[in-house]
Image (tube, rainbow, N blue to C red; front, top):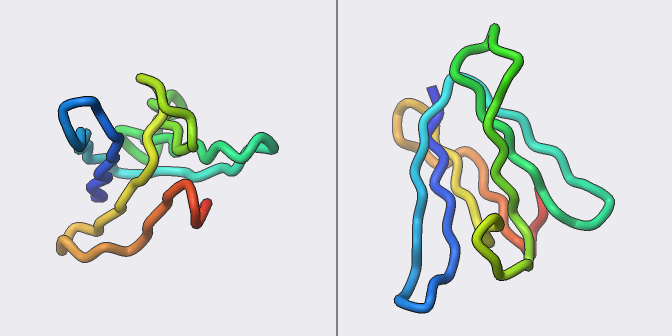
Amino acid sequence: MFVLKFFKKHESGLFSHVVSCQHYEKHVRENGVTTITIYKSEFTENGIEFHISKEDDREHYYQCYIENIAGKTIDKVNVYLGA
């Protein structure tokens, strides 16, 4: 089990979106956008995509922290570090 915390800047401050999943994948695209796909189980092929990039719009986040079941941060993706 993993917990992913996505962050974006909003006119009223910082906005976060927290999700949990059984499995996730990271992909860095040629345009510099990192796509994180989360899956409900390891046997599910359909996932939900989140995008990390410098784009300042409703669909892109600028940072993501990934925690394991013990609550320890095991990975971090942001617009400056990439995947």
